[in-house]
Length: 115
Length: 460
Picture 1 (cartoon, each protein chain N blue to C red):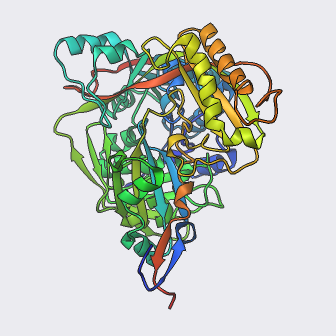
Picture 2: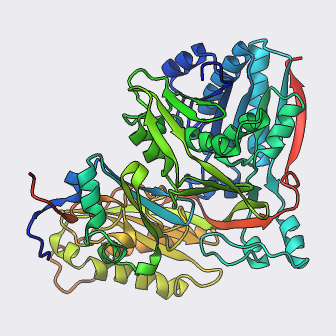
């Protein structure tokens, strides 16, 4: 997949927090928070963590991702998906939006060789 | 620096009543003699049912537990208490319930007389219908279309989200305990500092950081007390639980919690701009926050939240173990759907029904967002959810939609005495289905216009 000379690491091993939660009734927001600055920078640079990649992973149109930002004060990458129906509508599976993050765990992020 | 004025607000819970406040850190907090106790009781997270049906989401005993602690603590210290978004949703019923609980505590503990303000924020849908007919545009949030009479027809209860103005008015009128209808969670914290003349940006930023209490601290704990201190130059956050720390990372992490844009926060009357915010550790347990800015909105708008009933709802629970049936799961569900359609027509028609299959073990948790919707386990659990105009119809659809999984005709199945197991062959009555119908903003001339305040003396 990648042509980097370094190795890759899974997002679950780079981030200290990976979570999802409602942001209002129409959105689910995802936070990926890093403690290690070089891991944060690696994730920020990575082509594996972009709106298009997230859309592909969740099999949704990229236009459903209404925001995708890096937030330096928290060393975090944050993106938000618009729900198809508002939270808690009949048929909606997760009223808090709190179990939508696990597919992010195995995203492979290129990292510099440990030196 | 040492002589600088300051105000300290104590936040004991992120959602009063949702689970009881932890007493240990609450009592440590009281011993710090804060200048007020402020607690948010509202949340949209709980789904549209509590607002739409005007029911409390939290048990009354837990609401009472938290109100009892806060009222007794505030009276002991002689400081104001503000409780926002009463009873989860902030309807008029919720405000009245909380006022009655405050009264009960004051009378039982002989704390009176106490001046209480009840600020109501429920909006009669007919008021909005009148505005629409007068040509007022009420824009939708999150890409929703503008408010229409058709949306109002589908809506049972609407609340307006208040800013600081009605709360400050109530405090100025002598209220010692303020119970509000639906309120911006940052506004209930910002009211006291703004009334005392602290900078707007810091006041709202303090609200944003304190509204979920111990969620701004680490390690992760809920319902523990945190005290936030505001001066004219900065904020300082300190957890009261001895095992928690407010670190720059934990506070910054919380600043972006449950929000789309970590760089700004829209509050009634303006935007809190967090682009230049700075978090610095004072010591291991306290973090100083500076650099927030406030941008006044060109026009004051009030957010409206509304929910309405979709239909009656029934559930059935089944399991499937046969590996052959599992490999034909979509066909089994399609067979059951056909049987329902043969009797009731296609789903999703106006005035009709809806039928959902939640397949746990495949994509029951994530639904359409599940990237790997293949069955990997040796069994799955299926929750059949039916929504229909009447209870009898919902029951019948749930029964048909589940029993026909049992009778599904597959060319290859080896078991010929039932293709599914029933957890219990019964249809479970569920709460009616509701939907968030209103998430809109109403431009107003006067930030107080939509809210009504009642002042009363209890325990006198």
